[in-house]
Length: 433
Length: 156
View (cartoon, rainbow over the protein chains, first blue to last red):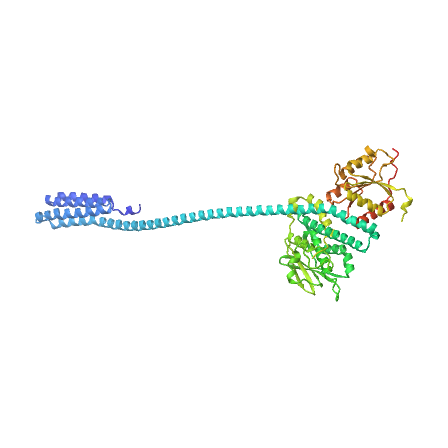
């Protein structure tokens, strides 16, 4: 739009035309011919402004050639007759007409240059745009691919998770079945066991005098065997109950638990003359009250049992606490016989014992029960020991345990079931290692 | 210490399906020298026949209304808790103290026993020494400490 404004004004051309016609009448015919050609040429050149660049040039050169040929011929034939003034006038007119033409040509060229430049720039922009578009397309494709890969990966992860969950559920189910089998089996075993144990007892009370010494020894052996079997069955029942029965997590003052535990094993403490030192910093934590009490019963009972037969010193048991990054760490240490490092892993296995029954009593289930409870809380248990000097059991309970189980199971099940653990623990758990 | 020998023997109905447990219980009572006449029923239905003097228990002289009922829980036909429910629903029988003596320790059973009017829930000890402790305790409580309703209701 802007470029076209530089074109010469049309009236100029008409003025040139009118002057040429005046000249026609002023001069002789030959010169008039000269003038008409000039005027035509001028008109052509002026109008050629409205043509495009290539045709403009062609018109100008053709016009110039015609002027030279016709004007030249006219000049030769009529030079004598033509006045110098007339000739000067025609040339002036020509000059006047050509100036705007040249100016317009210049502006046209400028316009073309700018246009070309613009076009170049536009094409560059176009190129840039194309590159950008292709890059964007690439990126889109890449993103799509990434999304697809992600989705595939997610599906795979989901599948794996589901598989794992299935496996976990299967394992849990099998575990539960096993536990419930153990429970039923141990329960059913008790009835005939009671018969054996009780009849042996009756025999001992009523007929012991009628037996000789070897007979009485045999009777005692039967009673001892039955008692041991009863302890083992009770331990099995306790272990199976640990899995079957989930008590709610609640806020528990550990000092209170330890106090109750000490009351429970008061007789053992007195008999063994043991000193029990309880750390005053025992905290209040969230845990399964009944099961954690079992942990303390077993650990303290063990500590007393394995430190009460040292000739040179009295049994001393310490219960201490430390806050560690993993949560709450409790430690029960004794000054007893210690455990050799090679046995340290073995003692947590069920019914594994390091000593003969006549040295230290117990079924070997206690520490296995303890480990099961601690791990059930998401904690860890380990020990440090110096043979001949003493042993320390450490266990951790994670902080901020939430009672998810209570929500999922409903409180009723827990209320009715929880005391069962207490029952199982009562007399059965004491034997360990 | 009260002298139980001076008192009338108490009538105990022992309801027990296991022969071994029956033998053990009877032996323990014998050894404890309980001043009691112990009658035996082998399941829940028999127990109800006994208290209502039906069928073979028709003779009220031979099978008097028991002063105490010792009930096992898991029995064929009619379980201990069913027998307890029938007795506690009968105005003429509900004064009789019913003691559950069983091998199981199901929390729900314990709760139901007391809810439905049972006097005590005792888990059978695994060995005879334990059994003797239970029977000694039983003797001390029911012969020495507690007063039973006796023959108050017998006139009808």
